[in-house]
Amino acid sequence: MQVAATTTTDRTRISRLRRHRARTRVGKIVLLVEVDEVALTEEFLACRFLKPNEAYDRDKLADACSRFLNMLTPGDPK
Image (cartoon, rainbow, N blue to C red):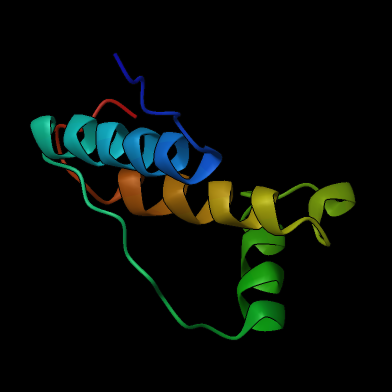
């Protein structure tokens, strides 16, 4: 009997597919948005969606953007 080895690529693909299905079940999508990073950061700092020490952290910027967009979605708890 042969056992197929699971490669890192397979695990990554499976993980990505699971996350995609989980998002789809709750009606969420992932968007690729092109924006001016400096302008967006400045606006999020001004409205306190970002703290000054988070201004150079792209993950924090992405989180702030997600929170902002979710705020615009009525009935969405997050």
